[in-house]
Length: 248
Length: 323
Image (tube, rainbow over all chains, first blue to last red; front, side, top):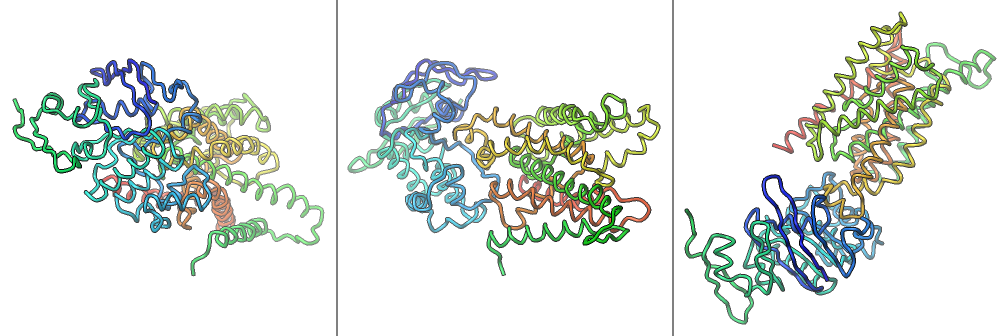
């Protein structure tokens, strides 16, 4: 269980996060949504403990998350930042197993889960952006972390790869623990996420199931648009339909 | 025919033995290696062998320093010579030697030169800033190298020793000529201290294939490991500078030679760079002895002749990547 109490983060001109309070239970895929600059990445960076100037308390599975040593924290944490480009042109299997020391069998099984087995001997420069992103996710999950944080993992991917990536995150959440994912595509978020966390101006505006969070009022307040949500058959997806853009 | 990794490494080792033997034997005066007389024994044990051993030690230091800097800064252009770290270490060494603060045989010399090396590394980090682009690191390095070079010139010019300025070429371009076991002993402690540090931080350096932010979540205290690795670079650079002056570009060439052989993983770059560095420096020194006539060519001149064009190629490639 992830518990955050009074989390704040100071920015250069204005607070990047203010008084965040939330509790999230395990085995959920939680989408972090909000407009650009709402504080999604800042929140994820704070939870990943890579933001040095944060104030407040974060507890994960009853442990004081921020006071854990890097080594102890790493045993439970997987992190995929917004932009990640491997500096050296190494092979995909070397990237996935970068600092972990898994046997070839374990590595192959993990590569198979992420449909990377056929690409194992290719270099980073020889695969597509989607395949590289999948490899980076496989790297982040090779230790089977209980807390996985991904900052916009589907940005720049085509529809098929977006669906695959979200399904992989969902599978990880169901099998291993809590997955937090920043995402701009609200339809995708509504379809795959168990809960959504709506951010606006560094504050948590709403937290709940997609239909509770993606209300007309919330969308107008946080994104500056009016949107109608159309529920398709058997509740598989919600499709936003912009009606009027509120401009000055 | 493509060689396997093991065959490739084995070939490098064979090459190392062959080139070292060539470096030992090449000289104006041929020696009888199988049954040397007393004079020849002195030449072999006090001149030839120390020179070769010193070449190995210096090359190992430069190879490790170049590889660690490139992996640490995530920058294929980083190297202690280009980035001015060697220059800062040399500046302190020159001040100690020519102003009579310490004798040339003192082991306090590498310790004081380490202050210069650490200052150079600190200045580089300060000027380039965190997450600096390769070009920014090079620009900061050029500024530091220019300042340290000017400082060296000024100190040698003002030194009370009337012959000090004549040694400008030695300190500026580096040389392995006229070295004894004493030089080896000056260089060895720095390398011996740095290698365990690098071993300790090796996984951190491998992890730096990814961004520092990600590495922080992979179980590494980035600030602490970075400082340790910078200390290792300063130790290695100082070790090479106090014994042989500033030999630039070898630290740049060695990791790229490893990558050219197809070993891109930081693990190979880190642990094979000292070997390729030895091969390069032994070759350069052998060549320097062969082409020299009246005076021996500083080995750094040959290193720069090969290294500078490579730097230009790499800069052009970086420009293409960031365009």
